Length: 371
Image 1 (cartoon, rainbow, N blue to C red):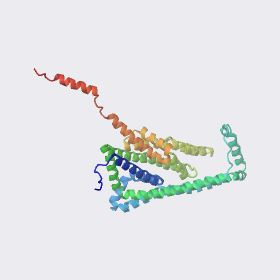
Image 2: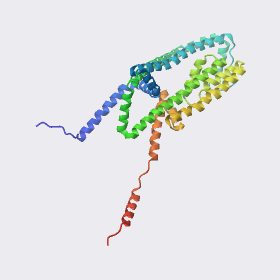
Image 3: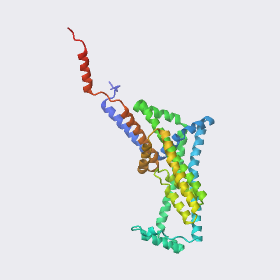
Image 4: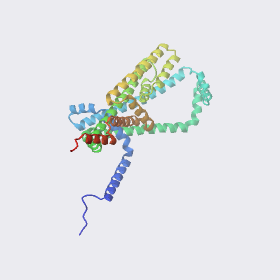
């Protein structure tokens, strides 16, 4: 008689099933690891732009066509700043070369030579460059290998960024097209893990992602645009490039926009343009800085309904640990953990066992005794 499999698996069979499932999951993560960054970027873009995509799909009335249009918008949003940066770099190089040929370069400030260890060397190099620019450029030939390696790294980084953008666009297309089916799967999985609480946490993660995109990225883009407008009005060279740098630094919400704006203001004062220097200083403090103080807290608080300190802590911690992608991952993780802890703290505690026994004894004593 052939042995038959029991309907209820044994303990050993359960362990084997768990090991096989864990091995399959680990293998899948290992395969997806190189593509994890573009997948996360695509998910962030889809989640943040989902309300707009729904309007687009209602007008187009075709999921594939709407997904294609949304993907093209994604490519344009990232390709335009890259093209502007490349063009502005060329313009800035031409302006710097023209400036060095037509005007006498200023010497180093007095505080430079007083810097410990590196101050005298920087001041000597500065004076050497001011005295004879061609000779200074010739002296830099000994650093050709390091310069070439740096340029190769920059080129490799740009190439990886382009590949990352293309892969993110491909994943974003499929996420847009199959978003409802993917969302239903995520909701069912969250419900299997933690019932309604899991679905609520899934909504918190989506709302936190939108709040970070609108509050952090939206504010940074606005600051960069306003900085470029102010720089262009004041006549600072390469305003688009400097505005892009301001926008990138504004992603870190600790007031780093002054790294670009303050030197630009100082350059105007050194050029004798006192009025434009005062204008750009006021513009940087009250317009560019004012947007950071007003717009960022408003958008974050409206999006996720989370304390601003929790979101900003997640943004900074994620940036320090995981880079630019950590801006979103850190904020989402801290937001979900905060909601879990808040709900746990608001739960009504169960009565202590001693109190339950005392109440039971009091109930027995209160009952009438038989005669």
